[in-house]
Length: 411
Image 1 (spheres, one colour):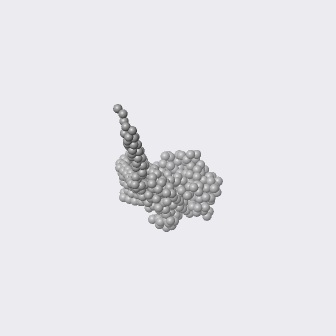
Image 2: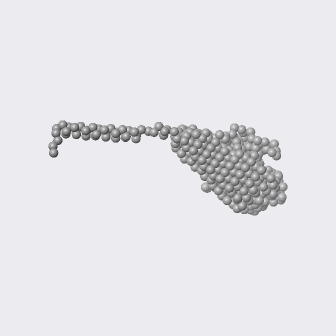
Image 3: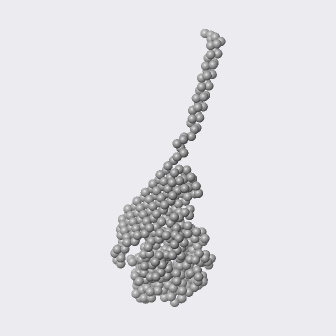
């Protein structure tokens, strides 16, 4: 069969038209797929982290609550981190609450960190609350940090002692809404002194440490520092560090930290002589208190306390003792026995107690002054919060009368 000339031309034209149409359709579909969606420019992210621990601590327990958010986004974000601990019982509860937020990009919205500790019963609660917010320059979020501790403690001497305080930690980018501008302190309950805020640290005292403390917690009045180096544990004071602390108008509380066994009169006297020698080497003036650091793991008896007190008192320095002075501790029992043997211990030895531990706070949000110590003693120092993670410090309250026996900037 044969085709005419015009038939072949018609077929060729038809195929050319179909081919062109196919290319046009393919190009049109491809262009449509590459066009961005008009709805992709608006994104909302909501993150809610709730941690609730109900603890009946009839025996010793340890609970760690860690929340971490690491986000880089151009979205509008609403982040809520909530940790609640409800503790009851007669045992010891060690609670570590840690919240860390790292936000980058053009993030906007809100960031709220809430920690609430409700402690009841006759047991002990050791609380470590740490909130860290790292926000880059392009982040625009409203930040709220709140740490609330409500403690109800009962013991033989105080059957209805209710202590409530509100505390919070700051932001690691230096934007601390909980900063304190009041250096006047609050009136003490039992004497004419005021209650002032302070810190102690095992770290080397540097400008960076001071900046960390001021940005995240507040400006201390008293700075507790160790007399001796212990490798891997503590940096001892040096003359350069002393000058730095005094240049910031802070009083130095001196801690003797070479004790591991606090038993025996001669042992107490020997450690006192070592503390005196270290103080003399640093040029500490007479009249300043030297504190024996008696940790809860150290065995202790009344003879050691008497040996320490007698030797320090005869040297021209003042005697002080640091430790956990809650009623049932061996240290408290030994101290009361030493005071019965020598009434001057009760009247003139200075106590710096780490009981009760209610958790790290800023200066502004420190609890009311409520230390545990032997009745009638000079309990003019209270280390109420241990082991802050933002800066390596503990947080304290002191009766301002104590500054008369601390190493002052003017001495």
